[in-house]
Image 1 (cartoon, rainbow, N blue to C red):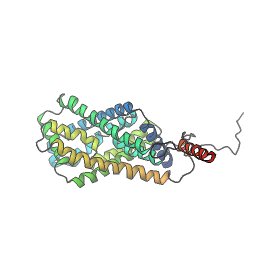
Image 2 (tube, rainbow, N blue to C red):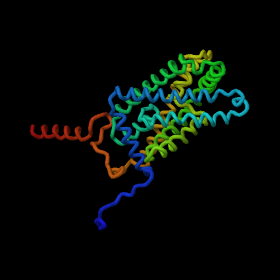
Image 3 (cartoon, one colour):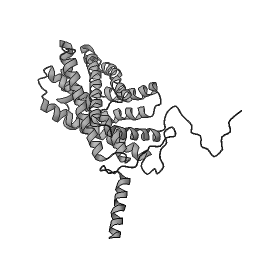
Image 4 (tube, one colour):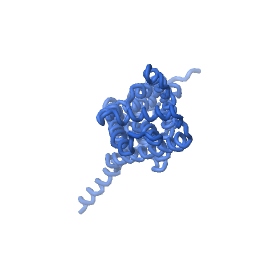
Length: 316
């Protein structure tokens, strides 16, 4: 016998992907979960993310080593490199590892949504940045460096040439602008992955924005944590640690903050969450917990404390 449902009971329709508003809600929830992890877990997760991305960078360095194509058909080599590199971001997102550049979007969203505080957000940025750096340098030195993966003459020449074009040739402002483009696309990939329900869709959502960032030659501060130190390790004469920090790391980092935090995090929060009084349901579930004040005090707890202080004053 067929089951009768009351007409007033809403029935949620499940689509093969979440809506843009639901995707923003999921990204906000992820930002809150990431920011509230234990510090040791954040560092470990970010170490793994930096290491995984460094493996992708090392693979791209081998693909780039094609002198004839570099001189006569550079677009073809960029195409192959752009097709190879996204596996790194796919592995990072699917394993739940933490990139600082992804955090610029995730925790910005959750903070604007009053689920994390500014202090928690900044803490996550700092820990993930240095965790990514540790993971990148570990793979660069131990695996690629002392493992002599890129020590052959052709690989060495191309690696140094690539790093030189990243650090020495462009002006500071150009690297900053390239940083904006890089993390706009990388965080768009992270955002789109939040909207997919199953693995194949997530992989495709991640792959193509990442493909675009690589083929356009933008600057991603975490990826450069492999490329530039690797060139220094191999004896690049024009690049010093100080030059790398001032001319590459700082402008790329600031550009990545703007690209991911502003052009993805702030924009989609404004479009889909700001001013929306109703909770956004994900498969029928609302996010639990009270709102968080921007500087780390739970809003409900602070309100209750204020009432108690007011009551004491009245009694006096």
